[in-house]
Structures are given as structure tokens and as C-alpha cells.
Length: 399
Ligand code: SAH
Image 1 (cartoon, helix red, strand yellow):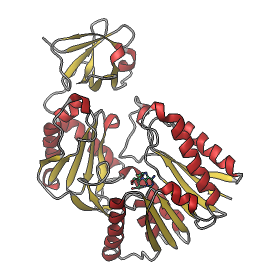
Image 2 (image 1 turned 90 degrees about the horizontal axis):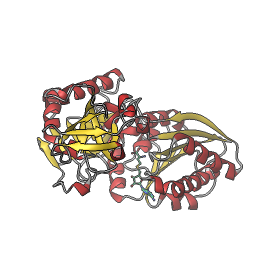
Image 3 (image 1 turned 180 degrees about the vertical axis):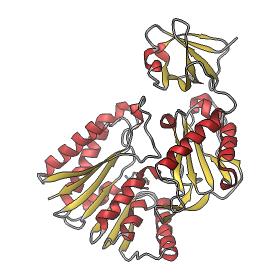
Image 4 (image 1 turned 120 degrees about the vertical axis):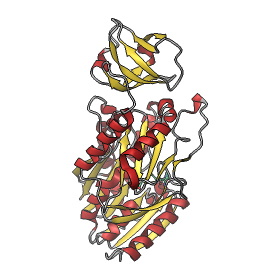
């Protein structure tokens, strides 16, 4: 018997508008022997086929892969990957001096539940759904067909992202090729050592590429503080663009040692001056900022981890963003610049802007917004799934 999910009346509207999720509350009946991760046909109450997607137990019951009558076929994965590759090519993200980019950004690339990041000759895959986890070998094969010799290995790092309730046997491992987990990649001509095995997420925060480039324009002659610096993305750009000094702060000792390595790699390989005085601090960034004197910095970067991972944590998270940003705004020198971010999906851009507004107001200083930032083109937002826009940033000028 065919595996079918029959929707309640009226619950087909959002799917007809190409929203990629079927919620469990919208289902009236499940036909056939459906297991988690199976591809199911989604059917309206009047019997029309709306599309096909991955079934999973939970509030999001189906993640749509295709819409309409056509089921995913043999060529499905390669088609989707090729289309995603074309998007990155069009956006100018794939270049000799930029060989680290996100190839698949879940819903943004019509592959809900899948992330694939490319680091030189390695693809790092993270499945966020059972269906994508079960399809990982097929996806690895399609990646190999797409890239040919340009791809040496595919690493599956789904153990921290795939749903643990599904009792999958999760073990991070190479699906193709092998390696020790490290590669030096080039981002806008600057070099970064990425460790996808031991690093956070897939190893590097590719979503801040555009912001890092923008930091370059503001760094010359400034004393920079990079809070939550991870492996030093912003710090290296500031140093390469004429900062007087850069202080980098992160609570992760592993990240700080990677940062030191990244400074060395750039110093020895590139013919650019990295003369800024650099200082690393393996500390709590919030305490560091609290204890640092006023006017010590002309540019402060505030890029914390997601303070709210779900809706229930929203109010506390907003208060935390507010306090942190108030401290940054009150400490920065006159005419100083602040780059501030939130990557919490549940904090929308209006809530974020309001939080920064109240942080500014609490300091009594004059503040102007110079840029409103979001994720770069290799993290596209599916227009039918606006929830996919998660990264928000503001660049402030503080009088
Ligand atoms: N700006 C970075 C990405 C930041 S990710 C880049 O461009 O690559 C968030 C970082 O915050 C992580 O490296 C994590 O180790 C660090 N972190 C989390 N909580 C922290 C805290 N309380 N104090 C300092 N660092 C913290």
C-alpha cells in the first residue's frame, strides 16, 4: 500500500503556497506502513496529491521535498545539488580566493533538514531530520557526481543535529574519502584553518562572511574588541585592514588556539601587513566587557551564540541581548562603531532592533544605525519559508 499522509480540510493551503512543512496537527490520517524518515505522499482532503516529503514523528510531521504530482526520483539529489551550486556561482561565492561556502541551506535550497558546507575539497554534511540522515549515502554520491575530482571527502557530522529521539545510530564519520578533519580554506583571500571534527557546528561560521568583509572597511586606525570571536574570523579581517589593535575574547580555549594558528597562517602566507597588536583572552565575554574601561575600544563586535534556542527562552534572551549591548554602547569611544548580532531564529528582526533601541536608550548616548545585516547569499531564504531568515545584525555609530 502506498504511504500517504491525508490532511484535514483547509490544511492544504500552506502546502499549496509551497510552505515546506506539514504540522502533525494538520493530519487527519496516515495510510500504509509509515516509518520515520520514509518519503510519503501528502494528499489533500479532497484527494489531490500535494507533493512528497520526509515523514518524522514530532510537531513538523513532513518536510516537503517536491510539490505537485512528481515524486523524488533517481536524479532528485543531483538536480537539487546542481541547482544550489548554480545559485552560489551566480552569487559569486565560489572563487579561487573563496573556497569555503554553504552549498545546501535546508529549506532555502528546497532540501529541508539538510546542511552541506564546502571547505576546499571536503563537504561537511549535517542532517537535522531522520529522512536526511537516512539519505546521507545517496547525498554523498550525488555530491561526488556534482564535483567529480574536486571533491576528496564527505564528512557526516549529524550526531549533534539529527533527532536523538529517533534512536538512530549516530556516529560522525567520513562517508567518502578520509582525513584528519582539517583544511586551510580561503575566505575573500584570507586564510582560515577549519577543523570540522572538533570545531563548532561544521567547523566555521560561514554565515558571517559578508559582515567580516564589511568590518574591513571600518577597521583602519581603530582599536578593536572582538567578543565571542570563535576562531577569529572578524579579528583577522580587522588586522588585515589596518586596525591599531585587536583584542579577541571567547570562552573556548580550543577556539582561541585556532585563532592564534589563523594569525600565524595569514602572517606567513600572505603578503599583507598584520601589524595590529593582537591579544587573546580565554574568558567569559560578558564579564570581560563589564570589566573593561570606557573608551578603550573604537570598534566592538558582539556576535554571541543563540541566547534563545526556543520560544520559551525568548524573554530571558532579549534581556540578555539588551544588557550586553547596553554595555558595549556605553563603553565604546566617541565616534565608535558597534557590530552587533543575533542568530536566534525566534528573535525576529523587529524584536532585535527594539532590543538594541532600548539598550541604546538606557545609555543616553546618540546612536545611529549605519547598516542592517543578514545572512549571505549562500544561506538563501526560501520566499515561502520566511522563518529561514535567522541572522540579524546592526552596525551602529555611537556619538
Ligand atoms: N564571530 C564568530 C562566531 C561566533 S559563535 C565567527 O565569526 O566565527 C559564538 C562563540 O561564542 C563561540 O565560539 C562560543 O565558544 C562563544 N561563547 C559562548 N558563550 C560565551 C561566553 N559566555 N563568553 C565568551 N564566549 C562565549
